Length: 400
Image (tube, rainbow, N blue to C red):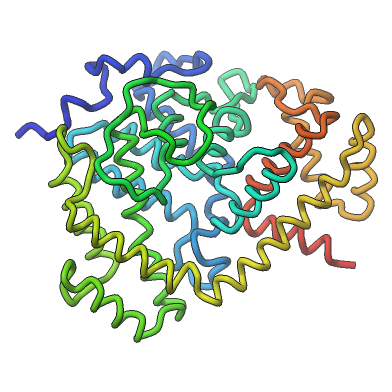
């Protein structure tokens, strides 16, 4: 039986294929490589340092002692699993879906959405521009993440347009239903806010929905395991959603219901969508999560500390800006805070216009003698940190 959207999948038969697989620069060829363009993107992402650091980045709960509480890397794997199941059911390109899903949070800040809000506030104050992790994910794959090529030269990931588009358009916090891919392959760097446009492909639309599916039930499961949710809370939840999900509810039931409903409801006429009944179910679950999980006192107390950590790190590194003498100021900082100074200096030398290692073939992106460029470099550096490394640097600042 033909799958409902197979004729719209992003394959060589699709008239928009050439736009979808276009790269900013030609990727080096291998005579014995049997991988598709999207599978090459997938493997390039999972070998990046940004992907590895996701295992030490907060999803919702900071530094859980239990190995069974979700971190950011598990979240992206959940999104990949869910999106692939949906793509296979609808007949879409699962390799494209997997690449978008595995890379969609590469630019996420440490400490989850609280870290993102703090960096957004700093960026607005210092640069007069917003910081949002979807666009930062695009910035990371286009400019920051480096891999050695077949000549041992480090270059950016240089992903296909369809994957880059899926990263900046995923916005899992959005609540719209009935997603249709947009028609034009616009300049992705021109986007100014999350959810401004739909993805260029049906596969990108699927990942956006899979992002919503992946966290809404898992966050409840983790909150219950950590004691953030009480028995009374769970009884309220059961009363709230029993009309939609019956009297038994857990992450497995939620994910299964949402995937099946999306696959049954989506088609060429309705786009990628849930039924209206299930969309209301998601709205109720989301409201519950915000009331009792994301705004819980224990979570709020931790978030207050995260803000202190990020602001102190930014203020310390940004205080070194002194025009042409900025490197001298960083060198002076090394005497007091060697970990913070040395790690930032080593990171920065891959991207600045001054002293650059000859194996770095990517164009310089920061002129650190320019105040705005230097501020952007500090924000970008902090955004790439894992929670653990940010805490290590902060501990050096407050230690004597």
